[in-house]
Length: 87
Image (cartoon, rainbow, N blue to C red):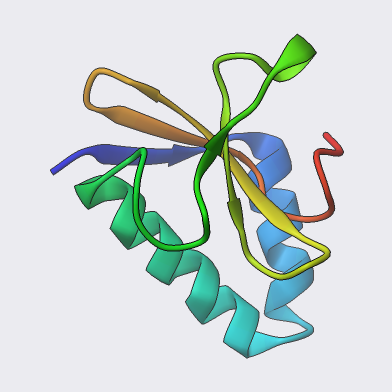
């Protein structure tokens, strides 16, 4: 199974959910678990990002929020999880 690490930004954004909507926290961790199994297919409509975000992937948390991550060998780095490509 792949190792998951969080950027400082992603950790701060995750705390925003912690004090708001607990259901979204569970959804984020459900997406992360799915990413560990299949990084480029699965839940949340995964899509590769383009332009200055090339090399990153996105999954839908809600219509407003996306989980942004990158995969390098066996390490998944969560870049952000609040907003729509804002970090």
